Length: 460
Image 1 (cartoon, rainbow, N blue to C red):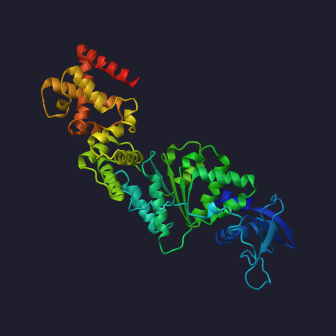
Image 2 (cartoon, rainbow, N blue to C red):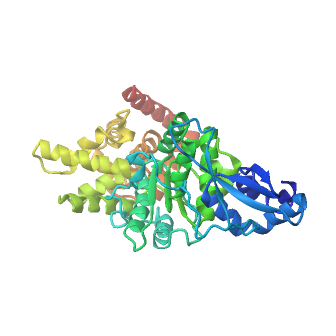
Image 3 (cartoon, helix red, strand yellow):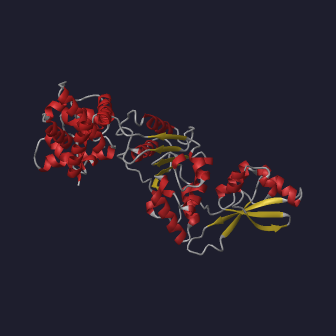
């Protein structure tokens, strides 16, 4: 092994030579045991000269090498595997046997649960139904490139990351479905990291680890969702590391999702993290206003419903956290309208949002803040949304914007929308103005504190 270690990279040595065990030495022929036919073929294609050099150095120039492949027979303890010699090795072992050797390939799907056999893809997740915007353009473009040439582009692995509900699962499954429609018959497998872990644990309990690994080595396109949940699971990471290596070195496509970029993943082995960075890492951000509006229109088209543009804009401005929440609001809105036989108008939209949108969990939403501030300053709510520039109204408007920024999860653009469609820069100016006035005007600061108490009482 020392000769081999001196002639190959450290990681290649760990991957391809550490698993080898000597089987027998007979008539100057060393038989080594390898885990699979694929393993044998890879050694023969890539490391034949290194092996020959090692054999010559240790046993002399006349020595030869043979292989023995472990074949899982299933149902036993695994301590007495059947082994099959693979003759005609390039390293020198010859055989009089005519034709290819007969053996039971460890890559056959033997005793594999039916749930393992399917791609596990949702056919509704396609590129056509995935709305493109500035928030996801790079990820979508990379996904389309991978779908057209899986395993051939430099985007291998393709790692997509972003927060909850931003469409990562939709996009990676769209890639899988697109490849599935292609001319080549590809074995595509989508699996969550949780399911992968559970399958591995079941394999350990039933002593079928080799069968588990061999199954995954057959995959042409492996899509694994939420890899951050592999954190802390050392044995699962170990098996995934070897599967990753085999697939990548065979030109198979690997696609992964995570809630953060590889550099921020905790509890994962460094050697895994380094491999995650080999290809392309692309983020998916919160959808911008235009994308949210496009998503609503797409949903309307799919469901065959009509919603007026003022309601569409209200929903798009109000729900700016993620796509999943936006779709949930739409489903609830349609359900309310259907059950109550009511028209989908602005009032119904506001009532629906009160029960769903996170910034109204404490019941301190934009509407309540506007109402409270307008009563305190004795102005009308409508005046806060109007273009009126009277000093007392401008102050009340700025204070209301300030509290919306403090008490809600609305973006600056969304807050501006609720005050007559003002720009986000107006909201920034309002917040800064209120902060500056509190520093120089003690009576103004007292008013702000009194309003804050009213709002806090509402949130209790």
